[in-house]
Length: 254
Image (cartoon, rainbow, N blue to C red; front, side, top):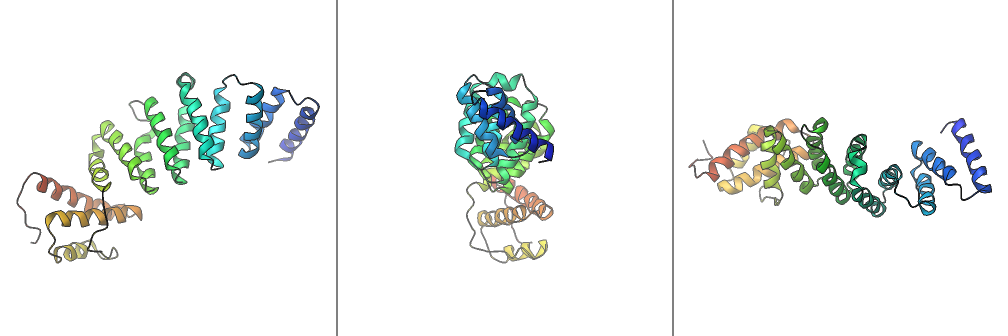
């Protein structure tokens, strides 16, 4: 915060001290603190403003929602999110708010505030129509996976597949992974792809258990960000899964 801003805050607080009911000054202080990243102070002044002027002001509630997320207060964030949802016309006539909320989703996912991110994401999906904004659904799917929120990842995988058929493999993966448990055979992921397959084949697994282990390998590689190996095993998994589900006879050992 530069010296000009600090001086301006002192001036506004002095004015407010002499007239504590001046909502214009209170709002200015809230906006200054918000724009300079001091979300705790911004929240204090915004809430003071609303207590004196309860008329709906979408920008203030949106700023309170954002502030609550940044100071890790999900309870308050839910409170303000419900107010925003109840006034959907505010977002409809302010398309730029979609981009603000979109960025907020990624912040929430990064901090694993999953329950709130689900609510906010579903709100956004109501407004985001084709074409998808900047690949928003795909980005949210991968962000959800990084946060290990597979329920939310599946939600976005379904939206991705609906908007873009190239994501159908991701959809199958997230549909299958939701009930994944740790397999009996633990694979050393540092091995080469070929050695992993040899180890699985040498274990005399049933086709179902073989697929179960492949899924665990895929999940492990994706979580560590090794998408090249993950894609390789995902392709193999999908092909074998298709054949198994369509009653093809196949021997896993060559």
